[in-house]
Image (cartoon, rainbow, N blue to C red; front, side, top):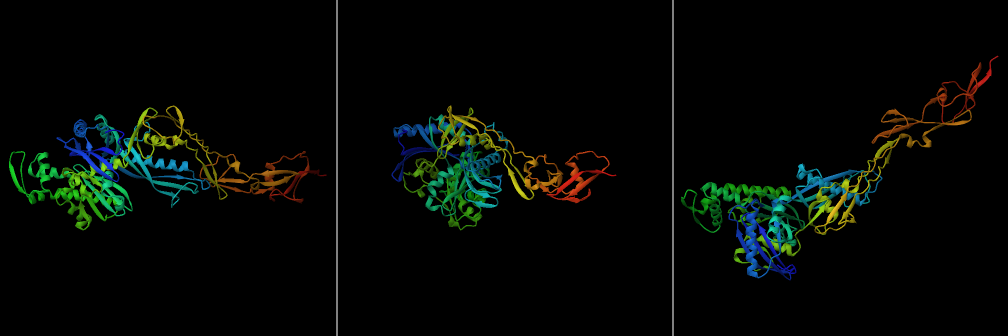
Length: 592
């Protein structure tokens, strides 16, 4: 397709049982299917929505591409695709940070804390890839803030606030690299450029549950051959996605087990259950069977119930409660008795669980007979989603020589690439040194550590910032920042004038250091301050004899009397000495 034809899109739905290619055109506010092609896999090239035989899928996609190009006399250069719902991981993660109560929170500090939360989510996904020198096993395709906390209170914005602790909870979204890479291998080897990448449950919900329906708490269940993908709407938006790794294939396998059928025959029998009362088939031993529809349905009843139970349990798990209704799409949703069993496990009326097909999609024309039914919803959704720019574009950049793939939520920046590369926020910003927080006579004091040295970034040889936008094939050179020095102090640094006792001895003022206790232990003023300690200064209790530690008496001892007076009055060695006392100590006249 010509790159200059923005109102048309070629979309592929690469499913477990079949591949669907569709050319969709936008006509004002409506859409029209110009052409489509459906080819089933001859062998099981995919399991549970994951490509296992890449070459076989490439062959099918190439055939679809060739047929559509020939029939429509155009070249298809770009393609919109979707990853299976099983590929989507959303993880909630919390990061927190202690604060100085007198410090005003900055935007940079909030961003660093958010990145810490994303990194923790990455570590939850794969504990084996914590080293930043290794590639993460997952693509981070974005994150959203669930809530900020200041202390124990939820707060709308942390910037400019003060407190002793702040925290953030994020919902981070990831795609496994193996899923994306196998899908992109097919795309590129078939000669396509990627138009957009979306997720199957997102594509389906885009056309089945439009925004004006999303106030309702509805579960959309796309039951394919390998997986059952779930999207939940509530309060005007899609609030959760989920997946169970069982679907139509489990029903087929149960048929094969019960009646000794090869897989293709079992699949054929399953499909005929929807419209034939009596079904004839031959087992692997060559025996021909003629069975009533109800007898076959009874044979698979247990497998259908297990599928319904798994779907229902997952809906409750990600929704947190029973939904108002369930909409089933996908070829597997046609399994007899499945909607009724889902309703039973969710304790919903039967009419609250329904199967919907492409007929539910509004404003789309050109739907032919073989594109009707629930299986056609997702391919149409992928195409519509791409035309409305709802998918994700992918660019490749390098960070210090290592390739990083970024999904475009808006315009990706240097910071997005560093997050995807797994680089620590401390390396990006240069962590400040640890502060000292302690008490002196019941008053809190905080000494800040030195600020860290920020990292340096170049993009394509030019100086850049974390906010510099990125484009395909950009090369980033990142030099980590340096941690600032930790705060250090000595007790003597905090000895103010008022804590000293001043005495006047023989006309000379002498300052007497107070008694100092750190965590209850007596220490000297040259002792380093410990983080979190409690320091107490107490005026030194003195008697006259203690004064001799601070003076030397002039003159000769001889046989005269040592005169000791405090404030002009005679005093002995045990007389208390108070702040401001005037003390005279000298040798008197010799005794006769």
